[in-house]
Image (tube, rainbow, N blue to C red):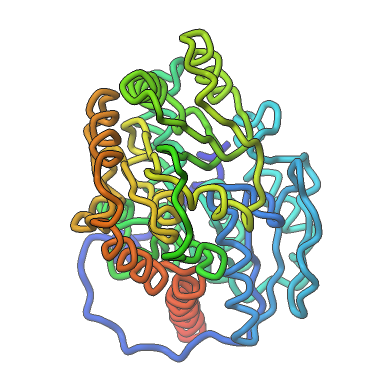
Amino acid sequence: MLFWLARARYTPRAMEAHQKPSAPAPKPARFRGGRWLLLTHEPFWPPSGGGSAEAFYLAKELLRRGSRVEVMAPEGERSASPPETPGLRVRPFRGWRLGRYSRFRPLRYLFYPLKLVREARALFDRNPPDAILAQHALSCAAAGRLKRAWGAPAVFNYLDCLAGYLERWPLMPRPAARALVQYELALPRRLEADAALAVSDELAERLAQNGFPASRILPIYYGFDAELFRFDPNSPRSPEPLAVMHGSFDRHHIGPIAMEAARRLLRSHPRLRIRFVGRVTGPLRKLLRRLEKDGLGRRVEATGFAPYAEVAEKIRPAWAGLVPYEDSTGAQCAFVAKAVEYLAVGVPTICTNLAGLRRFFGKEPMIRFAAFDPAAFAEAVLAELETPPETRAEAARKASARVAKELDWRTICRRAIDFAEAAAARAKTKSEEGR
């Protein structure tokens, strides 16, 4: 299905553009006041995790600049209408519900781009949008097809390398997973995207290695709402040692490293409690059962789903924030939201050695990076728990100030839309000159 969507028109001129560097073009006028189509495979409102939180802030930034925004997104388990906003129209995907916990989610993902193309063309063929902004590879595959049909500029927003997480699936053959990764990373080149936004420097580099011009790639990272995740120096830590982990708890979040590290931590530190903030998924339920079987369950708390606006208060008292991801291309390319949110509220963070985060936070004293090994990860957490909090106060304040300045959604979305508008303007100018 995705191979059909990604058939590209290769001409000698297009191939030459990919192979030879060209002189920088004059900076075009901004593309403002148009009508954008925002495509995503995640529910638009409320945010459900992953990259869905970013979509609403991108739409708000486009609206702030005078554009109109049409959103095509599936409905999920908790879907609702977004706050009424002039210029914003959400058109629910009619094929099927598709949330993070939908049944048969991989199969629904597979057919989503094809169905999305059909629904978009039925809605907009008579009056196509002026530009397309697509989130994640699934919607990018659809956007490439729509770009060809309408001649509209298309900007791909790579919030992760989705196929890269398949490398950790037990039933997925490694050669097949690697082939899917390479295919996903080549989509901007194959579909002749006008620009690509990347969630990390690592992902931006890999897109360039797969033939897309580096000058048309912008790493924008992954943000948070600085108004919700505030640093409060007077907020008390938990009286007893507390480690937290929050998020969606998919297979790549709760794997062998997380399971074994949790057992080691609870056995090594008799006063330690661990809190999981988020929906109790299959992988998390498996971890909880294992800890209960080992007699450690009474010191583990699972809060269940927490709205985005309430997460900060649940993680703020922690002595350490946990990011025990497994090694995969998907994880290496990620810019993990939970790490940013821990730093925002002043919680020291322990993370496996993820390249996307390490390249940005490599010199950040509030993050400890550990090898992809349960023992090494647990040892890093225990070292943090033994660190006197007064020695962390100034570093916590500086880390929070840094992420608030550089990674607030408003800052990220301004940069992203600046780049997207410039790409759309270049494409429109080139199209008009070619007539």
